[in-house]
Image 1 (tube, rainbow, N blue to C red):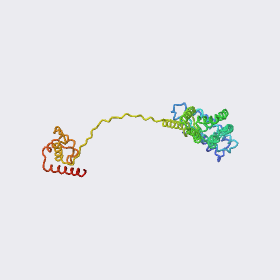
Image 2 (cartoon, helix red, strand yellow):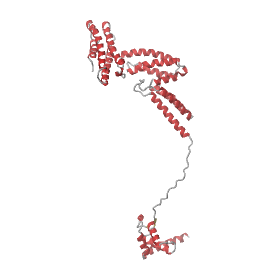
Image 3 (tube, rainbow, N blue to C red):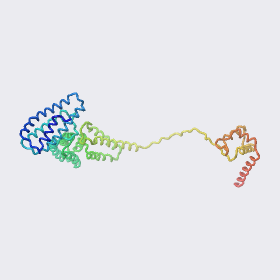
Image 4 (cartoon, helix red, strand yellow):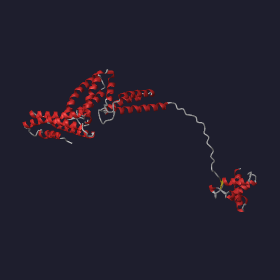
Length: 390
């Protein structure tokens, strides 16, 4: 929703003050008189929205819309840099009006502001000028401390990259503006022998999540993974984890790259992995004690097996009868013997089903001529095998 006053400012900047138009003295004086009223109306309008019964989401949407409108108009009027005389005076007063409105949103109503939006170019240039002064001091201090060239480069390039933009988000500008003074302070106060470690600690604490810096730190830690003694390696990574946990930044703090990975998470994950690998390697290096197990007795499970004969039931019954009569088999109780043979012998006709004990007993008692001939032929064949073998 564009308010009446921002609409008025839009008309003034994009139409009346456009270089192609020529404003007369009276028009300029009229606008100079109206601008304080517009500034006051905008302030009252924002106060009404914030302290009214409106839902927070609606307040946030309204103020962020005004923030975007002011940024757009400041970028537009920034292009009118060839103004002179009364028009220049009007331009400056208009900029003051927009700045007052924007500053109120960013400072007084900061919880509703959108810090992911780009800062207007005029404000950004002012911030860049301040940061460049800080950056000159940073470069001198890094050289005095004799920090590694690659570490100096990845820090300075990260800042120079943002400063070289035409604009940057509020988050980035706020981060850099607060980062550089703290960086210069620790470089000034730190002893040279500890400068690199102190700088790296500060960068981690301030969530300087440049991919180049993360890779730089991982490369430093990878050297510890080459420690030959496993216990020493584990101890080294355990101490490193303890130090890193002291460096952990508040999750709410602004990062150098707001959408980038958390540098603390990346580094602590690497350390935890190395600790786990060292623990596993130590465990694997221990001599293995193989317990001697007492033999386990397995209960006997009878196998359902039947002795297979190529005789018919008649021939098998007669063969058993002959072996009984020749005293080769002690029959005991003949009925039990016949039942045992019926249950444990298999003939081609009965297969695995087995034969009937009653049928076997009948065949045992009643032998036919053809049965005797078949059995006799088999016995003769066995005798020939004996003669042949011996």
